[in-house]
Image 1: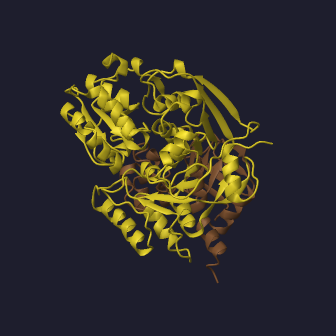
Image 2: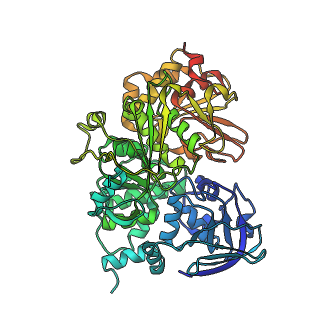
Length: 165
Length: 417
């Protein structure tokens, strides 16, 4: 997994639930790019048309609350989102993201849509390059960092099971 | 130092003494996936070079079955084929199972002291029987199929004590809505809730399941009711394997303790668009288009009995469609035998077999723009049951039934004297 990112901000408020990220009626595929077509369809109808590879989602508290659907982080990955920065995350969304390799960072940063944002996972720094604001965040616990370094839970499990020669 | 229920169960399953904050790998008793979360798990599992631990795996199609369209039919078929290929015997076909969480409980997979994960956020329902159970994603479910273990951060615990005799129409749903209204939708984020007290002890298992089911709506990782004799009575003749009760130590450490007077609680409604946006049913005077009775939160036989008693011999309001969806085949059969389905049908309600369909805006009861539904389900997010301008009001079965008769959100005591 890459460890630093730069991209344009898409901003959201508190309690963005998984129904907003990917409405349930589209949970009939696991194809990331097919899911991406409906990402934020009800909450931010322009998102799927205008999102660009590398863009960063910036949100408030409790991002990804609601369902356990892995389709939510997958839809964002499919849309090309490089990283999600939120003040806090709902726990299943957080786990899912780490396990499938979507970087998620708990940090508070003010941003307007389109601001240039940079994230450095190792340094634990988020910057709004458009406003100059900098915010620091706690680095992941060692086990979680190890999962990220190995590329997620599947590569880790393959290693534990001795799948690779 | 004493331990909470969560710390004790995870310690036992990790085979080492753990406390809140630690990350450990722990042995899982059962892993469940449904027809929406299963297909991704099946794809990921094929990347792992090991036979499936098929005795631990439970496959339950429920969200979009009977198939709502070709795409969902393909997903359901994928589950059926996976079960056959890997000889997973715990597969519950349409017409023989029902809503996954209720099936897990009815079929005895859930018992005190167990560690259970499910690729569905409402897996926390099993805490009602004293298990540590939590929702996970598809990819991690696949790794549990292969290893029978998963990583967990041991959560801090919060204690909720509810004491006193509850009013006539006050149910488990009203207790959990009151708690969520009090602490907010992330009030228990990452935490394990322990809910107890004389009000809880007096509740049947069914109401306790409603409480644990909605722990996730406060952000909780688990929502556990300390097990008692009622749990043993419920499990007699159902439970798979053996189990033992796990309770908290007297000197366990809690991040917070909150107390409620059960005598003061009233039937509650969570208004759009968060489960924390609660108000007494008697104060929410809005007209409704649909009344939904069902789901893992409140689709049990006890729920149907309460609602049937209220609608018996009466007619559903002209402007309202009432949908009654027993959560499982077992519940459907008992409801049929007890004459409850006839009571609902005579009142003008629509009855269907088990499915999650309408609860998540999938099918079988989707709302048009601007429509309002009073629902015994667990989420009222924007567009949850249909168009983004539609609205969901969460309530108990008694409030759903009373509201269906009056055509507006109604406290049951207005209808039954």
